[in-house]
Length: 461
Ligand code: UDX
Ligand code: UDX
Ligand code: ADP
Image (cartoon, rainbow, N blue to C red; front, side):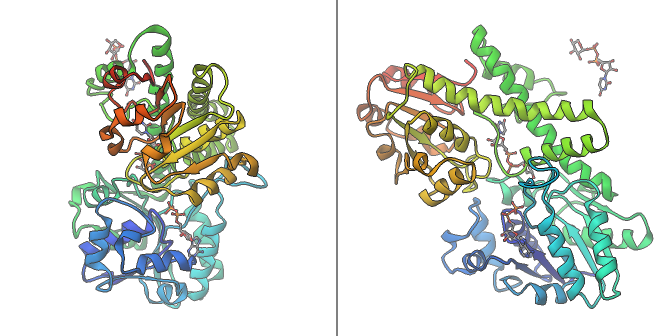
């Protein structure tokens, strides 16, 4: 089957950029991205491309090229489902906050709603593609809903996990290390895999498109994220040891990274990993393992999360201890709120946790993030259970100079490049003395800052 019409349910961090790139690379395919959130769709359609709901370097140009030509954003979900031969599901799958599996299992409520909607609307055969990260065997659940509630049409379910990282989404989509497509082993399933592979072959080399059964594909996504997160927790564990022994974690990372079996990427010690995927996917892996009685497997992966929580707590504690064991009514400046640079996404950002800890100690926090504003910051604190009174202690500023004015300390939470190039002498002059910098990303030039007069503390040295 040759695909000419695609629908994507979910216009978020995954659905938006992915469909924009597919549309750019496949001008003959009509791509419609739908979402329940009318504000979000309005922003995707807004003529000012600086206001796209997802900030990703290079995304504005891709959208500018394809939008209105063969890329459309809409809230009419039924119409888009009805017209499409292939439907991506890219809705959010947060960790459950209620009931059985609370805090661990993925909440599949949005996925199920999608499946039921597709079943209700579809009048012709469809290929349904899981794009969101899902627990192993979700495809089976989707299939069961479609087959039992549909209008008698045929559905093929594929798993095509997205491996893009935020901040580099467009580049990752244009040059993926691999595209993974899992499908049913029947001839119909293979045909569906071929149809989706053909879409990607418009710009991805066939050798980089790999095929597997559905469950391998689903599990590969969880495993990839678990391995990546594990590397961060591993180097963070070593960072604490470095601080005690006089070794330097950057030197250790460099030395081990040159072993080709280990590799140099994902070895940057930090205040802790964040993002919508790592924690959620590992919790999911832990939950699945436990549900099969695999206690050792579950405990092994859970340790990655335990280490990450420890790293965030440790960073906050170090600030309090260094500031003479009290931060009450002191101003602490946060540089960065996003979970990594080059994104406006703040989900699970380490900054939220560190801020929560410091406001509990009655500190005042002045935040500057190039892409995150006050309402989002307050929302994040509220979501993570910080009381209204404590939230009042957090204020966001237009720039780093205002955020750091009168501060006792600066904490670097996100590795935005621009932080490196500030006039650090000017910042120093306007701070309380001694002026402390806690570099949670090992981003700044510690030697230079020390020369200016700062007391500089990095992770793992
Ligand atoms: C190891 C380090 O590789 C080497 O750099 C260091 O100097 C000494 O320790 P070695 O123990 O000789 O070397 O062998 P290695 O190839 O690392 O294998 C260690 C064990 O891991 C073996 O039992 C091997 O069978 C096992 N292994 C290795 C696996 O089970 N799976 C793998 O993918 C790799
Ligand atoms: C991740 C995976 O990389 C991607 O393949 C998958 O599709 C989604 O999840 P993402 O969460 O967007 O992507 O960003 P990533 O670059 O993986 O960073 C995750 C977190 O780890 C960030 O908070 C980052 O700052 C942190 N990190 C990463 C480190 O602390 N040190 C590192 O060396 C690398
Ligand atoms: P991700 O990082 O996985 O892309 P996001 O939260 O950024 O997650 O995006 C998911 C999007 O899916 C949200 O914009 C949400 O409104 C949308 N969504 C969730 N459920 C449905 C649904 N049943 N129909 C349409 N859109 C949905």
